[in-house]
Image 1 (tube, rainbow, N blue to C red):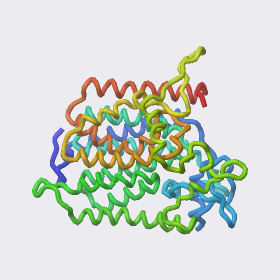
Image 2: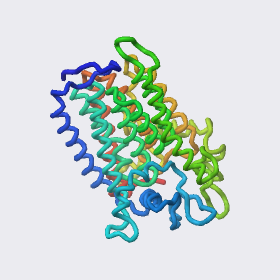
Image 3: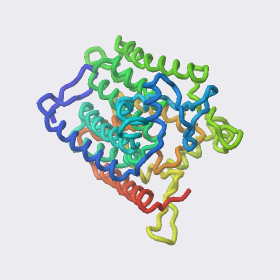
Image 4: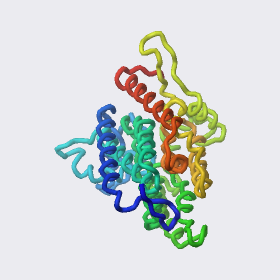
Length: 410
């Protein structure tokens, strides 16, 4: 692959070779769409379609109660959704055609999750192309991305899963702009939308800033692009602050602590929040899932029973750990952002159940793809191949036994 250097010093594909990658990226996306759609169960009764309809009606709350969801009662009636609102905004076009009073009814969550999942696969491919990663490496990394944790989350849909997918979509889109030295305000806006889906993802700002800081002519320095980057993210941050203030009287309160639990309690009374919503004391339980969570061997076929608690990434996505092999000027900044994002995830009281693998790793996967692209820019070795294949095989098994056989422990 021929490549040219951008103003940030990142390699990008020359215009003459874009035709074939465009076709290949499209085929990857269509294959992902079909796979996620077919292997995922139908999902009805989610919170995002009715919230999108509420926004169209000028409301910030749901009218009907959905007791199977974690919602916050509104003093004047109705229910607030205690999560950032951007996933609902993505469904506003669909809400114009679906929902009560329309001929189509409420949209099946598996449909919109599969569509966004397919978009993510295309964006991942395009990101690695813009990062100057060779074709063979692109294919292996996109395959590993699309057929491991992201496969499970896109196939299963559900409230938290769709929020993860939206965070990945906007994060990948923003990085696509940044690695090509595109308009910084656009990259910042997309980063803000990612944070408006999953708040910790906003801590990727150092990585975005690093992508705009370097130019071969004068090295590292602060530039006016950094002001535009912050301005773009700030637009969304201001909107989120207003949204929270209008609902709960604080710009920082998304409402999670107000979720009822049991007859008279709150979710903070549940045992996994014994030290509050966030605590350093919760980190070991997350690391246990990430590193040692496995299967239970039982006497009945197919003998290996997964748990809703999660499964080690060493089994379900081992190729991600190869990001430690990355070298280059951007590596410290990418790892800084990975650490900043993952820390609040690890400090959260619940660790993501029900899940296969560890779904919150998706918050940092776009950055890990950049690190893996640096580690394997022009080569694919046996270690990467084996790690990707292991993750795909384990996920295929997990999705089969959970979704088809219902063979899972609680």
